[in-house]
Image 1 (cartoon, rainbow, N blue to C red):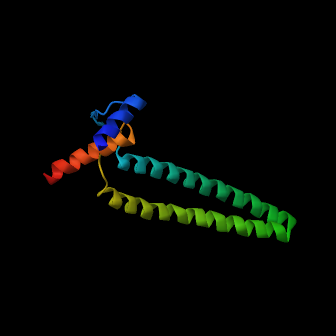
Image 2: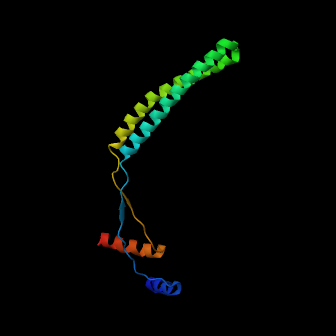
Length: 137
């Protein structure tokens, strides 16, 4: 009876009950280690640039402090010194993070398989029923 209903639905909906298997395509990702190294180098260069600019800014703000003796200028200088110190500290942090990423990368999946099913849910259910009968029998 279920086959009758399926065939009538197939006729009404103008679909076929055949399940088509299509070949899967393997998409290779670029090695993660290359991405990690590129990001590391980029981050490191940026942090070095920020530290150098910060040091120039510190020299400038200290000159302003000496000339004006304004308490606000000294406050800004203190904040700037703190920020440059934190940025320099981040240079050390990226070393640790890089080592952690490289360790994690050792057990990473090298290839990824993407499967795409094109069809209706009823066709998929039929296919799965056939597969489960094959596994049982």
